[in-house]
Image 1 (spheres, protein in one colour):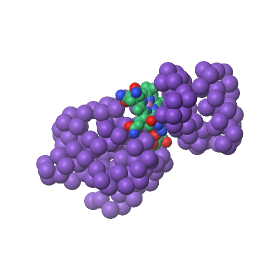
Image 2: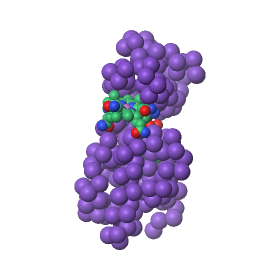
Image 3: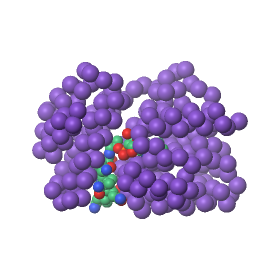
Length: 210
Ligand code: B12
């Protein structure tokens, strides 16, 4: 698989959409769409991010690669499962950030697994707190990809607490992958590394929540 990831990343970096699509299609012939997304696209984009950080890849390459991956992902994301689960009121949000792909995937996988949840899109702290309280949200999934956005989760958690809200917060995205203790520091209740983790976290909470 690591060879395929390298080939896929190289094709993104050289803007070779035909080759990238062929590699992704090949992966889809052997595994489920979500497994192909999480096993091929996510690690390839992570490698591109690291290469950009080191200076060997331009931001324009990351941008075009990211856009193309969005198109590929959009085509294969599963439809929602009509057999909905009874669950606490839930929502997902991209906090103060423009890296939207991870949230998009988590939202689709949650829905495909039978969970109904509000998609708040992109919000800042104050907007999110007001909306979560107004909607009487009990489970909040927050996606962030940049450290400043991750640190804003602390403001969300403290404001919700100060307003007496009983909301569990799960977080995910690059800053929490880079620093394994960050989710606790910002006051979240859980951290997930993948869309599958989001489903597992909410499933476990459902057993504990009235
Ligand atoms: C593609 C990309 C871009 C694209 C975004 C396109 C788009 N529409 O999304 C573009 C080129 C626009 C971009 C811009 C920038 N980027 Co950028 N980008 C990336 C890159 C390479 C991949 C992100 C991605 O889409 N990954 C694929 C998705 C599917 O993965 P994911 O989001 O991690 O989500 C998965 C899991 O994390 C998890 N998950 C996600 N959310 C949640 C939530 C919950 C609750 C759970 C349980 C799980 C979960 O499940 C998902 C599915 O598996 C990352 C590298 C990286 N390591 O992430 C850098 C990265 C995030 N970018 C970075 C930076 C710095 C920037 C810029 C500031 C660069 C600049 N100087 O302009 C800008 C800022 C834009 C902004 N204002 O937000 C840094 C952030 C560093 C930091 N610590 O803050 C990174 C980490 C690169 C790096 N190594 O330095 N970027």
